[in-house]
Length: 118
Image 1 (tube, rainbow, N blue to C red):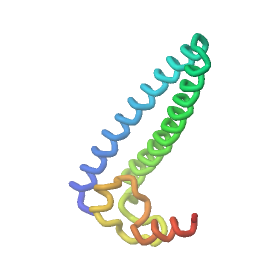
Image 2: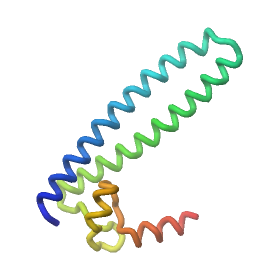
Image 3: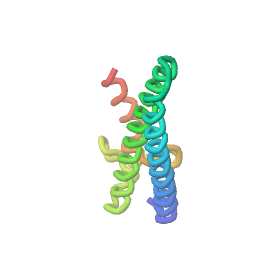
């Protein structure tokens, strides 16, 4: 795999990682604010706040999962294993990596994996 491409992917992953960390920190602040308002509202406000908290928690776990995937991709770059399918070992096309820089599988193997999970 071309070193310039690897360098650009590393920078893209680092930038996305920083954005996610900022997002998670912001969600934590929002969560604290919601908890404070629950104690002082009427029943409708309490219900709406509970829904907001649930949504923020779900978003936080999705972001945390993506953060883990990004960290794993950065580790693969450092180990020289980035860009190769973890299932079949073939090189993942650069177009796929540009769209999904933390992809672990080629399109074929990812499709097969999805079908198995259904």
